[in-house]
Image (cartoon, rainbow, N blue to C red; front, side, top):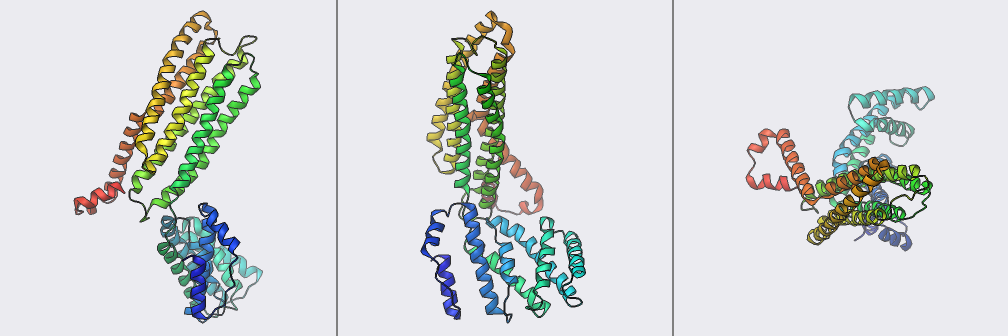
Length: 423
């Protein structure tokens, strides 16, 4: 049964009329239901509606608008965010309601009472330490002060707030928010695809005899833009990590989080290395004069190196996302093949560059920089290093948990310790 059907059923039992929801809206929600913004919008709307209906049923207030307001603030995209930030939101709203109740009993809504209410609410918000929700103390206080004529007593306003908070928390507990690992995996794959495309383009342009320096500089700018892309993927990873916490749908949340996080860290380092490669090629193009960008035998070898690195980056991203989808063995095999090919082509171009530098030593620093960047990227993508990184992260997590609850862990049975380490 959908959320719309639940609302209709609840309203019919209480004798509350509700208009039919157009089928186009339902189809659109199903079609784009995987998008976090769409899911957040629908979940918040449904939870706020439930809170309003519950307040109508449980109180005598004519228009209990504080209940849907509180539910709207409490319901978050992930269950972890609801249980952690929801409590602070409730405290912030209740504090604003109580402050406003004191003001409404003395003065009405005037310009000086509003300013004094905002000042007092912000001070109270800092005193009760609701962190980023300090402005919501003042917001809820202003809203309550504006609807004083609707809710007759401060107790009614507090009850409305509690009802909205309870409905919001129960909504995310009963209707568990989705796990955003899939969307985070897609973002990682897209980031790897952007890096792969740039590597392939650099290799293709290296073979051109009269390559304008402006075209190489454009690739450098694109490499610099990868930092912004990494930031967007990082936000997606954070959301996926939160969706895994406290979520009963996930069997191994800790390992999934570590796979995604360490994988993104590796891609971030590779993006930095790719930027330095682009810089070296740009400097070569600027200093070459009338000469070709690279020697006749160097250009094809460099293109082969870049093509193999591009395949390795793409396979690495597939490995990260495949571990989430239980296809790690096949992805690991592909990555091993790509890395072996990249190492072979690296040795080939190293020999060619050595002879080239001996004959034309003018650009030996840039050639050496390119070769060093290739070595760094291969080292970052190495599977053994990745396994070691995962093991280190698991050990660090275990040490943090032990330092957090040293006494409690002494009395835990072994099976519970293993379970916590796995999740």
